[in-house]
Length: 337
Image (tube, rainbow, N blue to C red):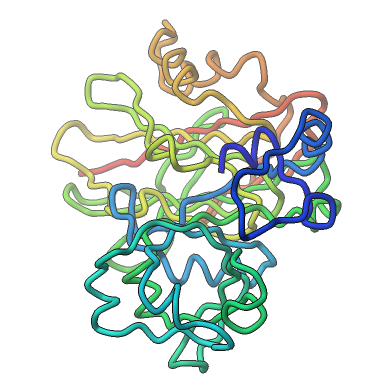
C-alpha cells in the first residue's frame, strides 16, 4: 500500500503482468513514469484498531463510490486448483482448515447482495484461465473467514471533481444511547461546547462528515492536561478521507464521560495536506498556552487557515478557502455532571 502511495503503479497497458513469473521488476524509467499514478491514501477497512475482521459494510461503501478495495486473503486448496471456468468460489470443509494456505493480495471490484446469498466480486492476478476470465465471486461469510486485511483506496479517476483550494467538514458528538447528536454552541474562538451537560458515565463518539477530500486527525486531552492521539489509531490507519461521508471515532469502542472533573476536551484537525500527527501532538504537549485550544492553535500556527466561519447547532460545519494554508483545528468541550 505504501509503495502505491509513495512510488505509484503503472497501468497494465504500460506494464503487462505475467502471471507465470514474479521476477520481472520495473526499470528506473518505468519507476519514474509510475510517479504520476500514485494513490493519495488508503483506509484499513476492518472492524477495529486491533480487530482485523473485514468491515463488510465499509467495503461496500467504498465500492459504491467507485473506490477499489485491496485485500490480503488466505488462498490454497480449491481456490488454486479447481477454479478454471468457475464464476464463484465455494470452499470445501478441507479448505476451511487452511491447510497449505498462504496469503495472497487481490482486488475487490464489486458486490451483489443477492448473488450467492450476498457476495463480493474479486479480480485475481493468475491469468484469464482462473475463474471467469480472471474474476470470481466469494460470498460474504467465506470472504469474512478467509480475508485477513482490507484497504480501501481513493478513487483516482474522480480526482478532478475536488477543488484543491476549498475545505468543507461537519463535525459533532453522537450520544450512544440515543444515537442522536449532542447540540453544540460556540464557546470561544474555534471552541464548541455541549449546550447542556451529559451525565458522568455516558458514552459518546465523535462524528466527522467530509464533502471534499481531506485528512482528518482527532486528539484528546488527558485528565492531567496532556494530549494524546485518538485517530489515526495505528500507523496502518490512514488519515486520508477521499471517500466522502460520515465517520465515527473511535470505531471499535466509545468514549466515556469519566468521574474526574466537569469537562472533557477533544480536538479535531482537518487538513488538505498530510500532517505528521505524532509531531503535532508533541507540539501540543510542548506548548505553554493555558488552554487546550490555545495549545492546538499554537501547534498549527504554520499551517492554520485564517478567517474560517463556523455554523453551530446539532453539529458544527464550515466551508472555507485555504488561501495558501492547509489546516483547520477546533476543540469540542463536553460538559458533564
